[in-house]
Image (cartoon, rainbow, N blue to C red; front, side):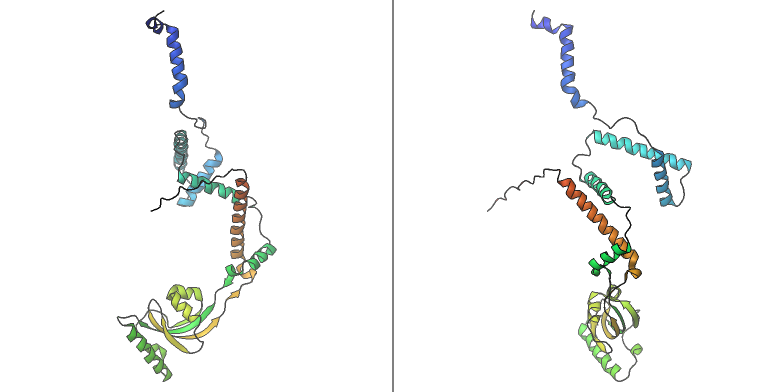
Length: 281
């Protein structure tokens, strides 16, 4: 039997087609999409309705809910098709999102345990700097706005010191400003927010009960008389319990997450390859 005759045989055609399907079908066949069934459970619909109400301030109408469900179905279809095409591979954004969700799950382990007062007291004692009340200060200030010549402004400050020593009233001195002249007991960090860090740092060291300056700020140069300065102090738990409880919970979440990751890492053989040597010369 010649080769030409052999190629005409139906059995040969059948075997050739079968071989081609065996070799090439895996290359063109659709990948697994995780099944063709999509279930939008009652729990999912309730969650969608709750999200809608938080966003818009009202429960969704029947039409709203229908559209939310349809969007959820579309999301699931497109997600499965994308995964089937391998679009999730080596995508940093997707990996980060999955990581965040897993970290949240790890943090929620033992999340139902509420701290006792003893837990919070121990946490407060172990982390005093987190809860220490900032220093409080009260003062008077007179400002000379910044001009082209800082030297001139500083000279005016010195002139005001002499005027005050001779009985001048503080309210009659200084340049125009919307800043208050008298600042009652105020945390030093708030003074730094309003006047600047350099100004607040100066007020933490200048003597109490006398006019001092010039003290620079973002507004200009100030003549300042400090009335009182209350040092930083530890606050009792009764006054700051919500803050301590919040920090305790954040700490618990962090410890739970790191412990879970450390345990998971034991199951992996981690290889860190050496970087290629940089060319010299």
